[in-house]
Length: 305
Figure 1 (cartoon, rainbow, N blue to C red):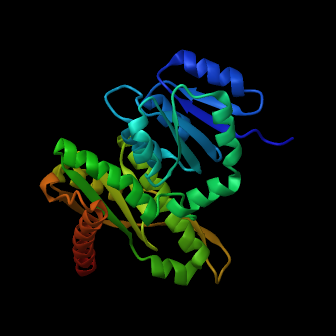
Figure 2 (figure 1 turned 90 degrees about the horizontal axis):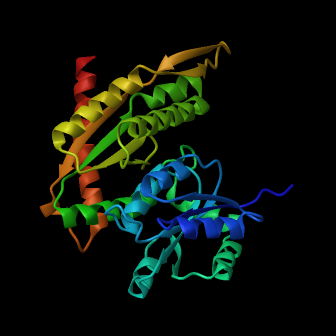
């Protein structure tokens, strides 16, 4: 039996949600939410790719782009985004945003929704996901981080709030590859990614976690002071150090569990330093600053051994 495509509708109009569910439930697996928190739960519990129709004016004080940024930080599977809005002046702007597939004006006819669903094949879903997410860990990759972080930096510039960055580097990954093989090295990377993701979800709801290199991760923390970011970074180090991963000794063929450590570096961006004409440059300047601190911490660790 062919699996029904999953379609998510997020709208604060409950009558509209009921209408969409009634119209599309026979041929699609329809899931609905009426607010931002409900939408986050929808994407967190996804078990495969999905198509999203998101009301731009969802309510709750945030616009559709702000909601989308938070959804993007929580999704692990391909998600193709379609905005729904009653403001025709937004159409061109929204369609020009990377990661947005369509924008439909209210009232939206059912046949328009159906046509959009039909035009979005699994190939498009996989392509979009592959271009913004790391295939090994499912975290955002460099491009995905740019797309999500640009929105956050725009909000930071508007609201005059600070943005923190935690740079995370895996300790001694090369010895793990040499002794236990590259599959164990990959397992270590996946383990660290999982720990970072779960720690972020347990403690905060809007952080963007990304794998930007072989053993390098970045977490962007909106509205976070240096002191709070430093506390979170140290908690991450402890959280990861207290866990272990299974590895196979290449020589003996026996399995054992080993600890994997991380080193972190923290930097904070003042809103006055945001280049509003080049958010990408601002992002990578912030990442570079946190990387410099991380490298200094790594040197201190080696001296202390």
